Image (cartoon, rainbow, N blue to C red):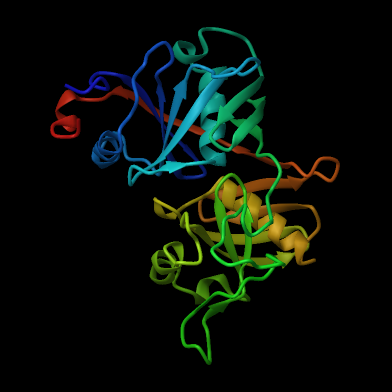
Amino acid sequence: MSALAERRFLKMNGLGNQIVVLDLRGTAITVSAQEARAVAAHPRSPFDQLMIIHDPRGPGADAFIRIMNNDGSDAGACGNGMRCIAWALCVDPPISGGLARDHLRLETRAGLLEAWMRDETTFTVDMGAPKFDWQDIPLRDPFPDTRYIELQAGPIDAPVLHSPSAVNMGNPHAVFFVDDLDAHDLARFGPLLENHPIFPDRANISLAQVLSPRHIRLKVWERGAGLTLACGSAACAALVAAARRKFTGREALVSLPGGDLDITWRESDSHVLMTGPVEMEWEDRFPAEIFAGAV
């Protein structure tokens, strides 16, 4: 039997980005890819990202957070999921332990992140500094300027999408700037571009329409999850990419299908701050039968 059987979980969302929060502190339980896919397939626990709380690995951290996509792969960052984690550790009694706090230090595969509670449904996450060097994104080919990379979708002589900006915000992102967001079928091009050989670790694919120097519309094909209503790290990547190309300043409202995020690319240390809401939907326990054959 899976060690996850009858474990309590929270079903949450950040702007419609489906999140499941699982607290495994105090245990040695490790979630397998097969178990993650089984959780995602169950009607009570569908997710874009599974956010797993583990005991901290280093001093000064409140927890280590493992992030899994619904295909069972691991992710380096998930801004909407980190806000849900912050809510759980600050507000949910079984997970918070009744501790009154409004500031957290959270370890992830991508590094140490900080989060602050603005109110009981609004949180800010410091997503760290973006990476721009081609080998840090990573890209297959050595592009000296990742504000534009050679990548296109559609006919060679008349590409539908071309010349995206590439940036790592804890995971790889490619941002295509377009004049009309609704004129492009991201569900068609997303899977092809996510798995393009130029991205050794695959990539999140975004379409961004700059409405003004302080407002961006965004749609995201998320690596390992597909089309999503919102993606926090993609919103950060879009603002950074837009600012690098002089389309916006270092602060903007990023509007996704699920709602809005306030993104600031701080000049003092290059860190990107993301502020937005979370929603608690329900809590439940994993039925043992969903893991049959998954162990």
